[in-house]
Length: 87
Image (cartoon, rainbow, N blue to C red; front, side):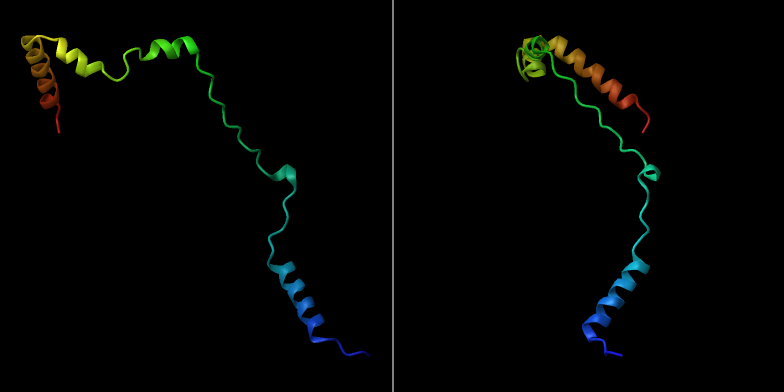
């Protein structure tokens, strides 16, 4: 009987250990189906144009146009709403 080389023994041992420790292969029909992510709908170009015609000026420009009396009324209303909430 011929003597085995040490490299053959190592390869055989490595293959044996891999066969024991590798997880079993799962058939494709057992695997859960991948979820499809919904694609984002395309934006309507006309709606994009109308969306922010004045940019981000909104509240600053609106507050500048208000009279001081009206601005004080809205501030008072906001303060009452803020402090009336239970903590």
